[in-house]
Length: 337
Image 1 (tube, rainbow, N blue to C red):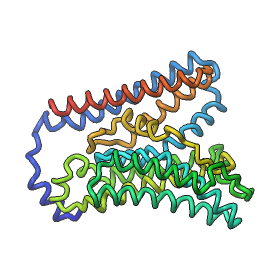
Image 2: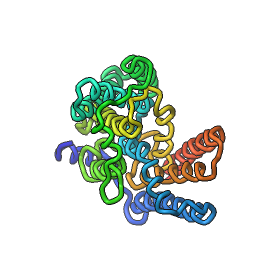
Image 3: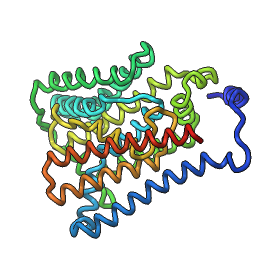
Image 4: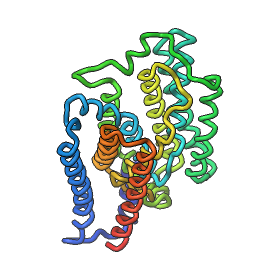
C-alpha cells in the first residue's frame, strides 16, 4: 500500500476514540494474549507436576519436534485466516509435496532437485487455490475442500498408490541434521515464526492482510490489490506446506500419500486458539505460538499417559470446538465495545 493510499484510507476512516476509549482496543488485545499465555503456563506447570516424565530434557526436545508440522503451517494459516479465508487442502499438499520430493529424488539421484520439486509442487497448489478463490470469487471453504480431494488424488497417482521409498541416503539428513541440539525441522519452524511475525507486524503486506480481512471493500478502495494479495498468501501457504512435506518425507524415509490426515484441523485449531479471528482482520504471531504450544502439550501429555487413539480424537475435537466458541465470544465482545 502506498503512502498516498494510506493517507487516503486514514482520511476516510472513522474518527478514533480519544482518551480512555482509545486505549480499550490495544489493552484488550494485550489482555487476551496475556490471558492465553497464563493458561499455557498453568497447563505446563500442571503437566510437569502430574506427569513424571513430562519435564525431562528428552521429552522437551521431543515436544518441540512433535509440533514442527503444526507450528510451521500455522504461521501461514494465520495469514490465510487473517484474510477471512481458510485452507483445508494444506494436509493434502504436505503429502503431495513429500511424494513429489521422494519420486524426484529417487529418479534423479539429486537431493537438491528433489527438495526443489517438492517445494515447487506445494507452492503451485497454493497459488492455484489463491487464483481460483481470487479470480473466480469461489468461497475458500469450497475451493480448498475440492483441492483437498484432488491434491490427495494427485499424491496417490504420483506414488502409484503406495509409499515411495527414498533411495538417496543424503535425503535423510534433512530431517535428522541438528544444530545446538535442535533438528532442522525445529529450526525451520522457529524461522517461520520469526519471518511471518515480522511480515505480519512490520510490513505493509501484513497490514494489508489484516485490513483486507477486516473489510475487503475498504481495503480495495484504499488501493490494496486484494486479488493479488490472496494469491500471494495462498502461495506462501503452499510453499510452507511444501517445505513441511519435504522434511516430513525425510524424517519418515519415504513419500507417503496417506500421511498428514486431519492435519489441517489441528493447524486451524492452533490458530483460532491463539486468537486468530475466523472472520478475518485479527491475528497475532505470539498468540499463534502459544496456541501451537498448548496443542502440542496436550498431545504430548496424552501420549505419555498412553491415552487410546480414539479418546485423543475426542480431546482434539473438543479443543477445536472450544477454540471456535472462544473466537465467537471475542467477536461478540469486540462488537459490543
